[in-house]
Image (cartoon, rainbow, N blue to C red; front, side, top):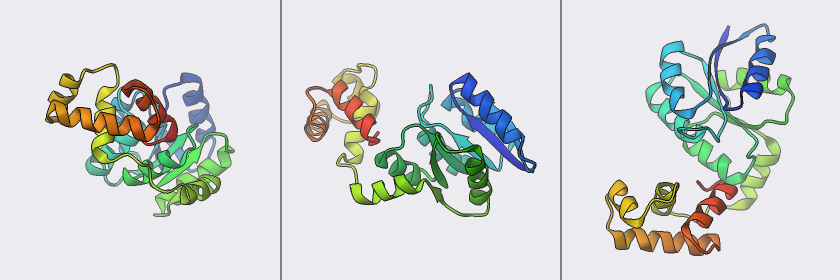
Length: 201
C-alpha cells in the first residue's frame, strides 16, 4: 500500500480527497492535517510514502513544509496540489524539493496516477503550467527581498523585520523599496499581495 499524508485546510475538500483516494486499491490515507505547521510532526509519526500538500495553509505554507520534509523526512515524496497554478509557485515548489505539482481541477484518477509516479522517482508537473513556467522566466525578487516581504506579513515594522532577519533597518528599507518597485505597487503590503499572486512568495 502507498501511504499518503494529506494537508488541506478546507475540511470538505480534505474529506473528499481522502475518501476518493481511499477507493484506490493501492492507496491508504494515513494522516490528515489542516495546518502547515502540523505536517512535519504528522509525517514523522505516520511515515507516509507521499505527502500531498496544499500551498496556502495556516501556520506554514505547503512550500515551506515541503522544504522541511526534504530535510526531516527525506524518504517522503512531496506532491503539491493547489488552486494556485502559477509559474512562480511551480518554481518555488521545485526549489523546495517537491516531486510534483498539480492543480486541483484534475480528475482523481490523474492524482492517483501522479502519486504512484512520484513514488517511483518521477517528477510530475501539470503540463499547461510547465509550459507557462518555461515561458515566464525567473521571478524578479531576490532572496533578501522575498525574506523581508515575508517578514512584513501582518504589518511588521521596519524595526521588527530588521530584528527578525538580523539586518540593519536601512538594509530592510532598501530591500522593501526595491521589492515595491519590482512589483509595481505603492507600499509593502501591496507588494506582499502582488508577489503572492504571482507565486514569488
